[in-house]
Amino acid sequence: MSVLDNVLKGLMRRYQERVLDVSVVTKALIKNEIVSDINEISNDHIAFRTMGVPQLGIASFEKIFKHYGYERRDNYYFEQKKVNAKWYAPPESHLPRIFISELDVSAFSDEIQTVITSYTDQITADPVDKIDLDNADEVDAFLHAPLWETPSWEDYKTLQSASEYAAWVIYNRYYLNHYTISVHELQAGYNSIEEFNKFVKAEGVKLNNAGGEIKISEDGLLLQSSTVSQLCEATFLDGDKHMISGSYVEFAERKLLPEFKGLSNDKIQRHHRRDGFEVGNADKIFESTFLSQTDRDKE
Image (cartoon, rainbow, N blue to C red; front, side, top):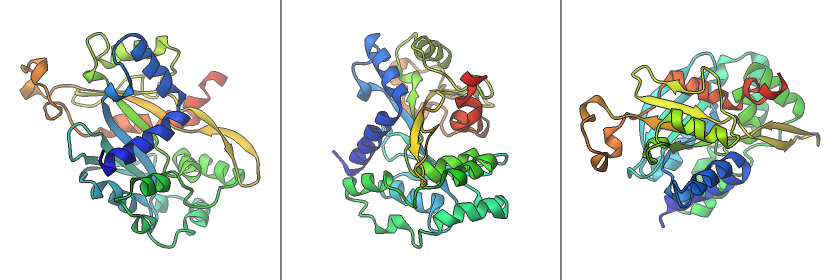
């Protein structure tokens, strides 16, 4: 098993422990004999959130996956959320794409920037440069280690009022934000977003309804849905414990590109399908961790 395989395995192990919906969906797929275990589920992409400040952000984080052969593709900007993002194509087609986003910290008020930098200024050099990227255990430990001191509840709430993305990152750091099931790789009856959504909702899974449960790209070839973030008990600097957004699961259906519509199923490969991402879709997927979704039961 390669270093990259072990890094991905470490990410998924801890992610599954935090996100109960992963187990719910996987067990339902196994129960219905769609897959025999989680390893048979095709992972479309995994996503990370970062702070766009010196020594951190995309420029730092991307070094990890570029080391393993990932190649940078498109750039995106989410104006309302003040977030930049890039995605990275894997060195082998069976591996997940990587989606990395960062908060455009400079776009916020001096007050919000001061709160953020009071934590991120504790990082005085790019931390990725200190890691042996050929040591999977070291990389795994880094991705799950605190980068700065635990925030106070007051600072968390201050950030949340200006940017729920900022609040998520200040507490969760580099925890895996989500992984994505490629529903088009499943058997008939489950291999469309519409069918898969019905399936998981019948298992009690709550879906993000921002912009509708199904987010559709302008070309109609990329359809995405996601669960609402799991709430996790978080202990803040002052010792207070609060339930806050953790991570979630995404589902994606990538349709065949027009020029490949005549291909038989046994000849279809990843490059025959719509690639990349869509700002409109991702913008609403981000909201899986937002109060507008996690607090819906309180309405």
